[in-house]
Length: 390
Figure 1 (cartoon, rainbow, N blue to C red):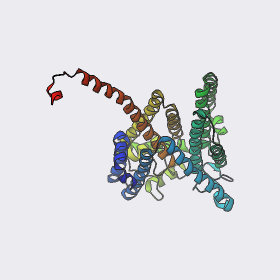
Figure 2 (spheres, rainbow, N blue to C red):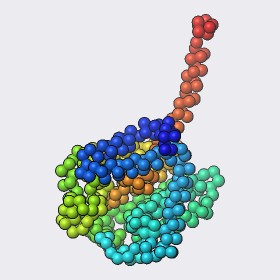
Figure 3 (cartoon, one colour):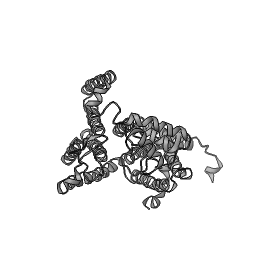
Figure 4 (cartoon, one colour):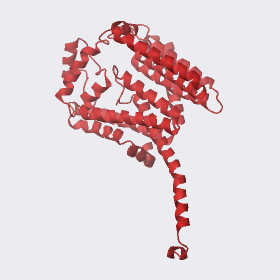
């Protein structure tokens, strides 16, 4: 309803993000060939609401205002999770085991599982890093105490969730934010720190390459990535059965579905999804849908780089950080093109906001040029011109 009220701004974003609009159309169209059309149609409606939320926030608020709104929303989730664990610890703290191992003592708060809480709190870390970086690199250069407290709260909940992926992403956001602040305020120190971080990253990659089993064990994973490597060949078989259009958005991995039952019998456990964002998209929307998603990612990366070149360094740097983290973590988790998932909402908000910011900068750049052109034309007009006499 809000997007309809502000339909001019809504259509402006839609026209500037044709790949995202095409993806939404393809998701709805997959109802026609889905193996479960009623479920696909319902989830496609949820996806449309997800995207309209991102469109509305991007069109009605500046980037800094949107980040602040996200901070408030995620703070409510964090405070609610802490309160829920305090009142109902038997529900807020998980018990038992699953495929990922021992769950005893892992926090899920108000979420259904520890991983969704870990991902949400990880985005909270990203948002607070953005706010603190803005304060640290601005004119006043003061850091709000409340945001530091929220950052500490989000980090603590990520640790309590024991989600390895969320923890690695949070560390990446913290290091990237510190590097950005150093680059703005003390570039020689930033250069040294960046070189050291690059060498440590290279060393870590070498260790993973030489002894991947031990490296995965340090992160609480086994050589099969908790069964994912057994699942992926079967997902590839599903993709090649319907390579162009896929099986329908949200139509796979349903309880009681024959395809899910057959895969569960083959690998010995029931997967909730493909555990890989690209395989998930290709299985649901075919290679066509996967190609459109790659275009969406490429557009976001290009906008991040363009913002840095155009002088909006913070937006560009944080957009690139978030896109890279989302794509890399998507190798083992389901992050892209998700229905009502906070990570996909933030991904699109950042991309849309960057596009609008670049459009504003381009318009500001063209306005003086237009005034100069009008002045030159007015001065070049002959004195005896008939239009002037009239």
